[in-house]
Length: 403
Image (cartoon, rainbow, N blue to C red):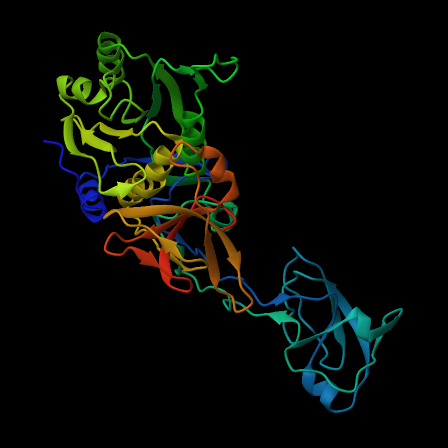
């Protein structure tokens, strides 16, 4: 029985069948894009000492307050050298950015405010702020503080933190081994010139690129509209891959063999068809070995929607992440009468008050993949309404990294 289920029900089923990704140790240089499976904890105070932030001299502030402006330079403190100590409070120590603040001093004056003549420094200011130009020990982060919690995807910022706390290797989630199958005799390789009745295999490259942005690598394969071949190829692949993504072959067409093939291969269907537009014939299932199957509609916009609405949700839940929702204002009125959730393509712009506004840009159906380059993501318009008005606020799922 192919009962269409609500969008929210599909999400709950996906969460029930989330993956369990194992943990592995990986060299720090190989961790960009990976998902952290341990907390990054400060192994020392940040900064670990009172740090000089300007090249210049360090003095005792009270000496300046007493009227002294000329200071004998006792010593020089460079970055990376042991801490110096001022012997005479009426003198100063020349200091460099990054050096440990010397003992016995409390204020730094930059070179721009000094006149240096040999071993004498004259301060050319009438007032000084006590303890200026010093980055004090532990003011950023105290030792033992969790700087980056586990579960976060590692960007260059987190890699920098990991190096700073001495992590040459990191515990990260081992991502599933993924294969993306295009299906259909009408599809030809991208490097071929299609005949009038053919098109190039484009969907799978977009999905592969999206997964790569999410830290997941995937292989690409193709299946002809041949049930026996599909049975053999998918059966073999079930022993090699963990996550399967198919595009096409899941609707009601005469050559849409995929649901029957998956059933024969003991892949349990958890749902097939959702109350949404586009992408109604989306199929999701798994087998007893924990292999997960996402069978997406063949139309490019439909498959793109299902990747961002469902596959991303499943990955986030599998990684222990709580999906965040971006809300935006609708710029233009929209009418949509079918009792379906409507994933509508829209372009974002930022208003002067800091709010994000989404301009709905309707394409020419779920096959109009060219419309995707004009937009930034999908509005999620609920199925209990038919009229959507400008300035109303709705969830938005972006496929542009700029947002």
